Amino acid sequence: MHISEIAWGHVKNPSDYGKLGDEVKVMVIGLEGDKISLSMKRLTEDPWLEATKKISDRTVIDGEINRITPFGRFHQAQR
Image 1 (cartoon, one colour):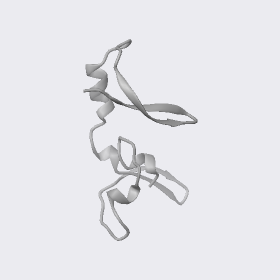
Image 2 (cartoon, rainbow, N blue to C red):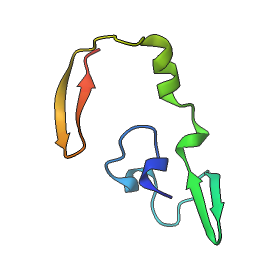
Image 3 (cartoon, one colour):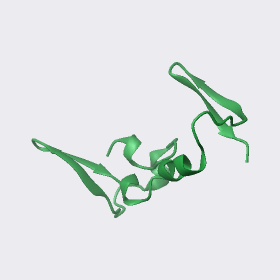
């Protein structure tokens, strides 16, 4: 299973979600030849769908940058 299919949020350490030999519930999301794609996160509700109901376009949200990568800035929104 690809790390992006483990949980809806950032997965820092996949071993936090299970270890070798654990039984887990997954959804088959793709079949290509002898490759099977699996997902754990798709068995739970997408939190981004709920967020789009609460936050409209052009809403300003204050936050603090806590990580910088070559492809973006990440922050934890203030509650």
